[in-house]
Amino acid sequence: MTTPVLEVEDLRVEVEGRSADIVDDISFTIEAGEVLGLVGESGSGKSTIGLAVLGHTRRGAAIVSGAVRIEGRDILRLSERQRRALRGRTVSYVPQDPASALNPGLRIRTQLEEILEAHGWGESRLARAARLAQMLDEVLLPKDDKFLSRYPHQLSGGQQQRVGLAMAFACRPRVIVLDEPTTGLDVTTQRHVLSTVRDLCSAHGVAALYVSHDLAVVASLADRVAVMYAGRIVENGPERVLFRGAAHPYTRRLIEAIPEMSGRHALEGIAGTAPRPGQRPAGCFFAPRCREAIEACVEAFPPVERVSEQHTVRCIRHAHVLAGAAQARRPAAELPAAETDAALVRIRGVNATHGERQVLFDIDLTVQPRQCVALVGESGSGKTTLARCIAGLHRSFSGEIAL
View 1 (cartoon, rainbow, N blue to C red):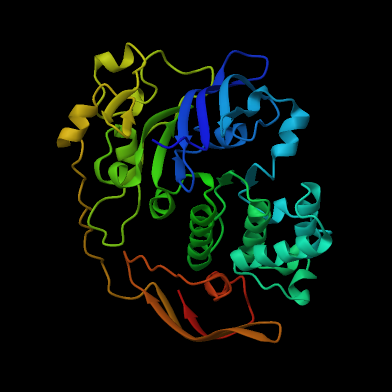
View 2: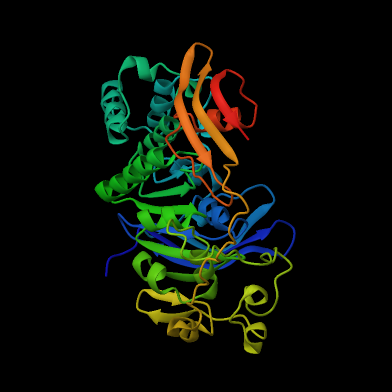
């Protein structure tokens, strides 16, 4: 059995000055070249764990116990000065918003060079220049002077995120934390960014923690998935196992909430909200929202149980869930026929411009009653402009729009 690059053991983070935990009893490992997806609803503690892997917390939170070991070294036992030296070189972080992570007043070249110089990468300026060029090649960005002389606002969202990835992987870290790095990117750019992450982790043996609420993204990237609810990991296992045979009712409900293109099943949310720190019940935290809960669920907090060698779950009803009693999905409801066949939206020959640049070309589109039309495309393809034309917010267009 290989030694994990990252090992988190019994981690607890509390609200500072109170005994209320934000996350508790958090344990997991990540091996070299492996991606662990950390998923759950907003407020479940995912980003708190991601920051704790760097030995850091947001203001108002404090790490009170546990261990975060990178190649056997517990970074929580180091001084803040020692941890600061590790960030960027041994463990790196890619934030959700690439624009906020880049200095708007510095050119791209300067920002890439700074991280190499700050961590003493390379014995000479020539060596750092060679590494800079290699960094850009790895994330599929241009390395010419024109690109490197740009400021962050002159790059697309996808390019900004790739610069962030280049900086994160610059010093060949052993661990990287990615906090929803594709939020706000179009699906094509998102796919390229995820492919880059996967390739870099595999090529350089980096252990990656990928924080996300998007299960579809995690399914395409992660080797293993840890599901969080109200500050606890409630299920942990290989991606292929969790998405085909989840053992926790919460994981099942998350999967049921993923939209499907066929429309065969109803899209179901989860009623209620997760309990906040300091307001969590004695029993299973998910019991008040769970369709499978019984009296025993509210009496005591469930222990971690092993479903298989690599699959664990916190649910005393997991055998019942796996047996299929909780698997039935409600089919999509049959909608009554529309009272009229007349189109609610009719667009004919619409052309639109931004200044002197034409962005829409001869658009024809109709939307019938009870119909949902998805408008998809890459960033800059004209989706928002067409929507603004329909809403009457963009006046520089020709053609017919009838509502």
